[in-house]
Image (cartoon, rainbow, N blue to C red; front, side, top):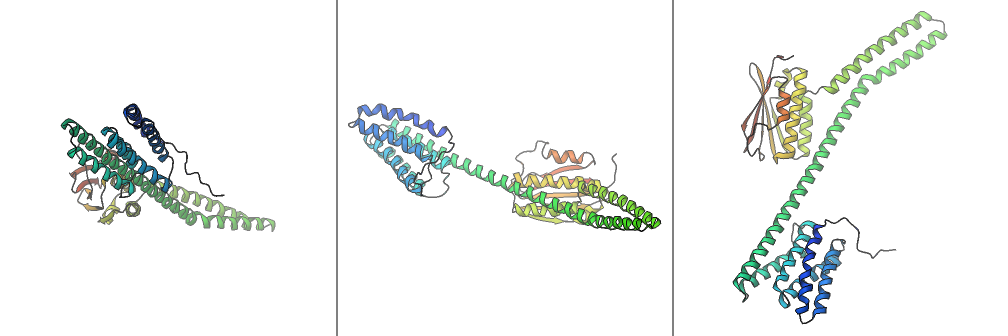
Length: 368
């Protein structure tokens, strides 16, 4: 059976209802109008329809209710009190915070026309100059609030999109790591367990045939295989905890591609001369730089350049994002902390347009 109920319960911010407190004024001025009961009824209908729009997505009903709100505002404006136009603030709240309109539709077009009519009336109407100025200032303030709210809504959408993008990147990283570990386990231990099963079955057969010497040899082989497999597992665990720069750059390439940032890498082979411990630290530094790039920079391109002198490997990082507004000395503190154990150094060449950072990693193992 088709349902005709078009209203749905949802949690609504209480700020949407604050503006309705000003309906006190229409109720108060109704006693001075020619048709007080009609004016009160129209005001009640305004309140009911305004609230109902917050709980429905039905396009036909929403359109009719919207145009009633506008009709009520202008009927009161022309026939009762010019201050009735201030209820258009309720419409701007619906546009910005409830519907989050960012393009032209019947709501935004009718709102723009209404504001235009109000400004024209404020300028041309034969009213006191202070009323003109007050009306213009109040509605300019309302417009500023509308555009400010829309900008805030757009910012929230961008942040939500960024969070979703970061979640996708984290899932990709986790999936890559799981695949790598599973492949390593398969390659390292799969054939070992198969061989151990065969050796165990062969030992059992030899014992049953009373070939104890040969069975003993198979048991010794099993013991040797188990020791070797334990060594392989330890090595695998170390590899899980160790990241080479080559592996990290492959992951970063996928991360930034997902974030629609073009990555260029030069001199990558120079980093292979670093010790495994330093490669792990540099990999973490690269991860920190990439996270900062994705979350804060708003960049479209990123360049990584590895160079070498007698004592250092130098990583030059550059992007075309918004950069740092000012330099406080605490920027990228997590990168600085990772450089301390290896006695590395970080230098900000340019804070913006472009953002360029030089990181120096000593070649020698001169730390405990």
